[in-house]
Structure formats: C-alpha cells, structure tokens
Amino acid sequence: GVGGTSTGNSNVGVLIADTNSNITSAGGSVSVTAVGGGVGASSDNYGLYVVGQSFISAGGDGNVLVAGTGGTSTGNFNVGVLIADANSKITSSDGDVSVTGQGGGSGESSDNHGILVSGAGQITAGGSGSVRVIGTGGEGSGDNNRGVFVVDANSEITSSGGDITVIGQGGGS
Image (cartoon, rainbow, N blue to C red):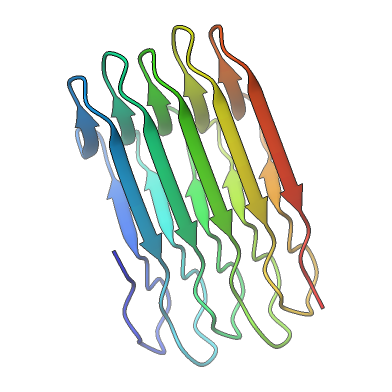
C-alpha cells in the first residue's frame, strides 16, 4: 500500500487497526510492503502502522516478510514500521520473521525512525523461527532519526527458539 499525497497528516501506506483487524495466514507465508505518503509539512506518514491489538501473522511454518518506508515530507514522525501498543505485533507460529524499515522525512524533520516498537508492541517468532530486524533512520536534519527504536515497558523483539538479528543505522544529515 502507498499513502496519499495530502498535505494533511497520517498518510499511511498500510494501517492495521483495532482488535480483529489482522493480516494472517493459516500456514502460508505473508508479505506486506508499505510506503507512507504526505507532502509539504505533513507528519505521521508511516509506511506500516500496526495498532489497537491488531497483528500480522503466519501460521504453521509460514514466514512473515514486512517492509515499510516512511513518507518524505518535511514534517516529523515519518516512520517506516510502527507497532504501537499492547498485543499489536508482527509474529509467526514457527516460521521466520523479517522486518525492514526505512525512516522518511526531509529538510529539518525529526523522529523519522526506521522501526519503532512502542507501548508494549512486539516483533516475535514462535517455535524455531528466527527474527531479523533492519532499520535505517530518515535523512531529516532534525533529532532522533533512529534506525531501530524499542521503547516503553514490555515492548520487545523476541524469538521462542530461533536466532535474533537486529541491525540499526541512525539517520540524519
């Protein structure tokens, strides 16, 4: 999904919000690609936004592949992938989970994280599945353009039995 080109805020590429709003498979792999929109000084143009106890998951040995890119406006919080509260997650039953996020933003924008896990959100793999998280902060000249940012109690990146790899590259100019 691709967010709109509005000067208003929240031009989200893919929004999964509220309980029972999910992207899931019973055993096959799941792939989601999302790009935030927005122009001018609009803000909160997330690539992928998972919130309100929603989730992306693959059952059985299916893998999950997620890629999100934040919008390129001069506003703040153009986050690539945002998982924002308790029970909101990207997960698998036994397959691998890969999440890649590229923060957006331009000019003096700030807080353009590649991947932001907050409010007890989770990236996790069950069984023997591995987790790979790669985030790059946006190029705005403002502060806090982090590659991977895990914040708040119970926000986590975990695996039940597989390897975990986290690679973050801060942005900024």
